[in-house]
Image 1 (cartoon, rainbow, N blue to C red):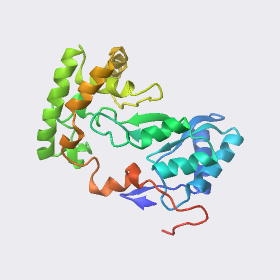
Image 2 (cartoon, rainbow, N blue to C red; image 1 turned 90 degrees about the vertical axis):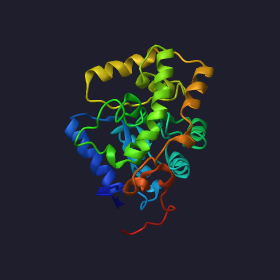
Image 3 (cartoon, helix red, strand yellow; image 1 turned 135 degrees about the horizontal axis):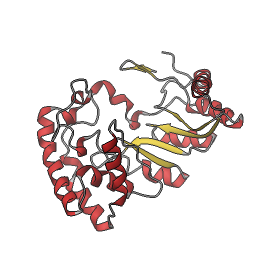
Image 4 (spheres, one colour; image 1 turned 180 degrees about the vertical axis):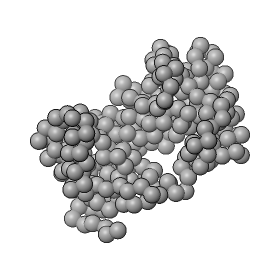
Length: 253
């Protein structure tokens, strides 16, 4: 699958070649958790998983993860070999996975690894309190575009007010909210600054009750978030489109 300048290849040959190359670069004997990042919509997930299963049996990887997969793909993959973790976007303003993906993961015993738990930095003030770097890709995302950002700033201010109530920053509150979604949830906030890393770590100290969680969720009504999650050229990477052909077929590119 080649889209938006990104090639996604889930063929057995490519998967094995990538893992062998990773082992060599890292100079290790095995990889603890290996994700099939995004879904190759041209290759049956059973083909990808069968090769990953072989690599587990060979001791080259310990656990298998998926990223951005649809419920059907998750179920089909898990039937070949247990999936340990699903990497997927989850934050205060991205909660569309809660109805179907989260219950499925819990039914199958799959850990959830939310990326962009701070809304790609929005709840840390990106675009609101601080300008976006000149080389940032965020201005291409609808929620960070001027008209939408003005509307979304109202949401930020609500979270900021709640953060003061809990004695923390908006970023810490947003991250604490994700952390409180369950013991099977391990968010991965990204940062390039040590001070932000320390701040993110301190979100573990923020304790929230069920009432607190409900109040925070209500402060960010999903139907009031302005703008689509992804720009048009990346929309096909949403988990809703993370499907693969039936086993025994392959779509030519």
